[in-house]
Amino acid sequence: MKTSMFKSPVANTGRLLRSALALLVLTGLVMAQSAAALEVVEMKQPEANKVVIMVRFRNGAIADPEGKGGLTYATANLMTQGGAGGRSYGDMQDALYPWAASYSVLVDKEVSTFVFQVPVDFLDAFYPLVRDVLLKPNFSEEDFARVMKQQQNFVDQTIRASSDEDYSKMALEHLLFRGTNMAHMKQGNSASVAAITLDDVKAHYASAFTANNVRLGLAGNYPHSLRENLERDLAALPATPFTPAEPGAARTADGIEVEIIAKEGAFGSAIYTGAPLG
Image 1 (cartoon, rainbow, N blue to C red):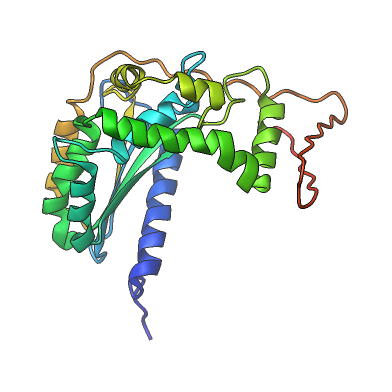
Image 2: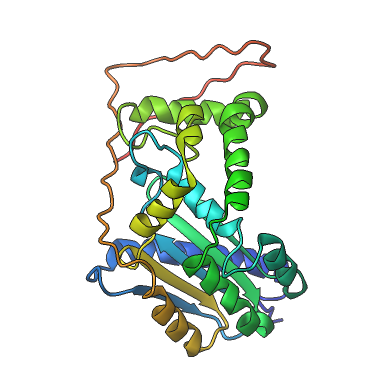
C-alpha cells in the first residue's frame, strides 16, 4: 500500500524544515555567486500543505564588535520578538494564531537564520509579516527593554544556575576557542550585554543584516510569485558593504588539557571532552 509522506502534519512540518535547512546549508558549500546576486535554494513539494521560508545572513556571533558580545543575537531577536511595520509584537502574534503560522530566528557563531512557516492557504496573508520582520523592525524602546532583560537574565542567571549541562558545553567551547572570536557565547556575557544600546542594535542591523550577505531558502508548496516577491523585497535590505568575519581557529592542545569549574551547591559532577575538527 502506498503511504503519503504527508500523512502526519506534525511529522511533515519537522521533515520539511529539516530538509530545507540541510539543503540550504549544503548548497552553501557548492554555490558561488557574486555578492550582489541573491542566492536562492528551492525545494518544491507540490503535495505539501506548508511553506517554509528561510532567510540566512552570514554574520552570527563572530560579527559582534569588540566589547559588544551578544549584539548579533540581540538584533536578530529584537527583529523576531518585537513589533514591525508599525504593528506591535502582540498584534503580530495575534495575527499568527488563526493561521497556525510561526517565525523565529536561529543565531549561531557564523550565521543567523530566520525561519518562517505557514500553511499554504494563509501564505498571502502571512507574507506582509515576513517582509516587515526583515525590512521594517520597529526597534522600539519598549521592545528593546523587554528583549534585553531576557538576554541579561540568561547570561547572568539561567546559564549559570539552571543548566549545568549547557554551561559545561559552553565552557568547553570557550576552552577550545579561547582568544578568538569563536570563544564567547552567542548571547554574550554579563558585561557585554549590559553595554548594548538600542542605537547599537540599529547600527548593527544596518551593517550586518544587509542585501550583500543574505541567502534565501524556499521549501514546500509555494507559487513562483513568492520567490519573485522575496527577491524584490530582500533587495531593499540595507546596501551597506559587508565582509563576513573569518572564524577563529580552535587551539590544538599539547597533550591533555583539563579545566575544572567549581560550582557551590552543584547537584553532581560532569566530565566533558572535546577536540577540534578540521
